[in-house]
Figure 1 (cartoon, helix red, strand yellow):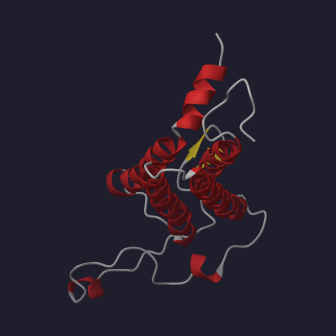
Figure 2 (tube, helix red, strand yellow):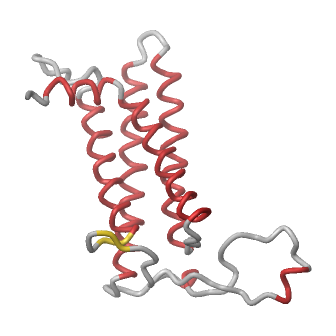
Length: 177
């Protein structure tokens, strides 16, 4: 089986895939929060910011694709996608290091006040405040925490974004650069 046509298709349709990937990662994070009861810590919320930014850039790239002669604009937007995903990987890698006690977390990781704001503020005053610490992995799969998996996914998305800058029409016999 030849993988070249598969990768060519991914790169040629990258803004769609980047948008779908970003929105999927956000949906998964919110699903873990809502349905599995895993409250996000401060660093978890910062990791989501990269996906919101990437989703906005990918949506702009989809509109830019419709413009005549917008190849440089598309490449610039794909480069911005690369930076967004690299930024997300850095935040996730930092969070993973905090979870594995490789380095200390941010002051906001242990300070009170994190999490969602209840709709009944007066009624919630009698309830204890539960602050999610950044240095405790809430979920581990195959030895990696959610932050670790997020870092790997962000790195993969960054690599594809970078390749889409070099090969905006996909992998062809002749180099597009």
